[in-house]
Length: 108
Length: 114
Image (cartoon, chains in turn cyan, brown):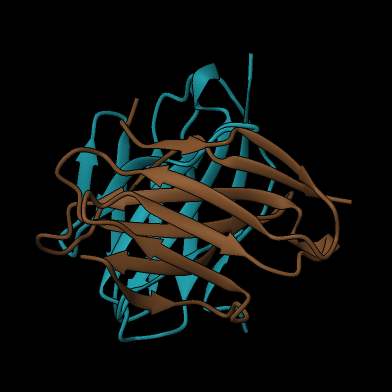
C-alpha cells in the first residue's frame, strides 16, 4: 500500500460547481499536510497547508481527519483556471511524500 | 515567482554518463529538497539538505548524491545514468523554522537519458 493515496481522476466538473477530493495516508506519525497544485509541465505550487482545525482560503477549504487518516480539499464556485492536478503532500520525520495527484478539469 | 531557480532547464545525456543539476534557494531559506518526477507521477522525494547536511533521504540508490553550500544553494549529482532516470528534477526550498515546513519549488530541470 502506498503511503499517500489519491484518486487520480480525472474529475470533470462544470464551471461554478463544488468539487471535493480526498487523500489518505497510511502512517499515523505523519506530522504536517499540504495541498499543492501543478499545471501541465510546470512545477508544483503550494495551495495551502492543512491544519487540524481545518482552514479556508477563499474558495478553498482543507480538512484533516487524523482518526481516519485522510485530508480533503473542497473547491467552491469552481473556475476554469482551477483546472490542474492537485497533489496531496504528507511530511513525516524529514521525509516528504507526495501523492500521485488528482486531475481536475473544469468544463465551461 | 518563488525565487527558487534551477539550471539547466533541459539536459540530454547518454546512459552511463554523470550529471550535475543546480538549485538556488529562496532568500532566507536554509533547507533544500530534491525530487524526481516521472511523467504522470507525483514527485518522489530524493533527499533534503539542511544547513549543509543531508537530513532525510527517500528510496534512491547512492548514485544519487548531493551537496548544499554555505549560501544554501544545492547540487544534485547522478552517476552512471540509466534510461529510467529521465524525468523532471525539482528542487524546493523552505525556511524550516516551525512546522509545517512549507516548500517552494523551482521550475525544474528536464533530464533526458538516451
